[in-house]
Image 1 (tube, rainbow over the protein chains, first blue to last red):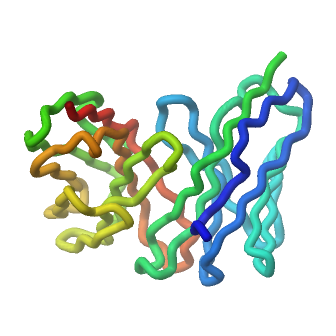
Image 2 (image 1 turned 180 degrees about the vertical axis):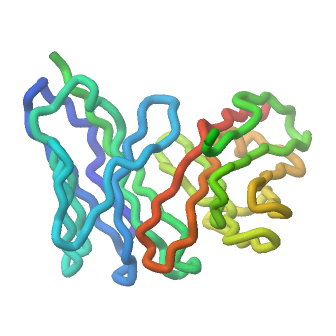
Length: 112
Length: 115
């Protein structure tokens, strides 16, 4: 099992749609979880951290299920500007607890 | 703050040539790392450092050397470039946080082509 697995995508949705991305991780000792966004030919940038209680930032909601080792990202009312690749990221406790392991990413394309 | 800077932005090498990818950060972050990103493979950790004088291997360290003589700089060296090292290289930094909440800031990347 790969350390971090994501929906393969791509997701093609119209403006205004709600879309959900899923991610599973293999190391039960992982303690930090994030969603990053990466635009074409650009560096990854933090979208939001994921907390055990779930957290929301505007149109974006992240959920964590530690028992199932599952992370999700929900985007409501999609905008054209949401088109990007979304990376699920967890920390790697077996590497001094500081290294981050990235999923391969899920591509979202929002069309008008 | 300039954040994380990388040079060069683009580079073409011939097989067997050596070069150094530069990375610098001005945020006084203890932790710095190098990733490579290939199509269909996602970001893979090459080397990382938790402070000056301390480095360690990541997932794909073969063919790369690093050193950390200062907090600010973390160069990545290719001693003998191979076509398999054609990739986009990202440097990243973050503060060390025992609570593991701190996330990483990435540089703009270096696109390397090895012929």
